[in-house]
Length: 237
Image (cartoon, rainbow, N blue to C red; front, side, top):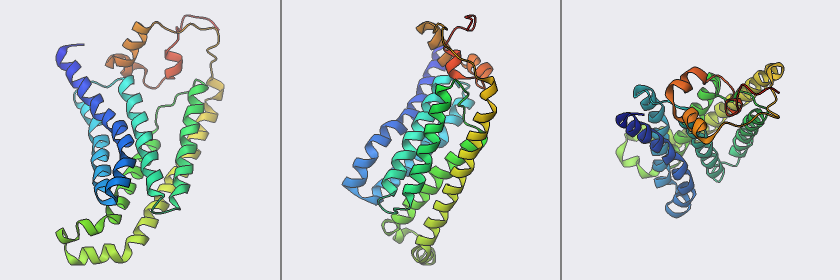
C-alpha cells in the first residue's frame, strides 16, 4: 500500500475506532456530567458514523478490516446508547432486547459460515436507530439550549417531547422487527449453501492481513462469507 493510501486508510479506521473508545467513555460521561453533555457527545460520535464510510469510499480505501471495525463499533455504540437511554425510558429495554437478538442472529450466522454483511435494510435500520436515539437525547437535554431556539419551538418540544420520543421508539422497534425477520429469512435461504470448514486449513497471518487490508480483494469478495475466506479454498472437505 502506498504511503498516501496508508495514511488515508489509518485515518478512516481511527475515525471508526473513536466510536468504540467513545462507547466506553459514554457511561462515565452520562453519570458524571448528566444528560446534557452526554447528548452532545452522542451526536459527535454519531457524526463519525456518518463520515467514515463516505471517506473510505471517496479515498478508495475500503477493506474487510474497515468493514468489520465499522460493524463492531456501530453495534457497541448502539447497545451502549440504548442501555443508557433505558434509564430515562424503561420501554427502551424492548429496543435493547431486539438489538441483542439481531446481534446474536449475526453471530450465529457467522458461526455457521454464512455471509454476515449488512443488508441495505440492516444499514437503514442502523441509521434510523442511531439517528432516532440521538434525537431523543437532544430532546431530553432541551433545557440546556432553550435560550438558543425560538420560544415556539421550545414550547412545542416541551409539550410533545414524550409523544415524540415514544413515536421514535416505535419506529425503531418496527425497523428492528422487520430487520430481524429479513435476516432470518435470508439465513434460511442460505442453509442449502452452507459449507462446512471442518478439516480445512486456515490461511497464514500474512495472507489474512492481505485479505483484511487490500481494497481490491474486498471489492471482489465482499459478498462472500468472511469465515470461509479465512481458509484455503483448495482444501477438500
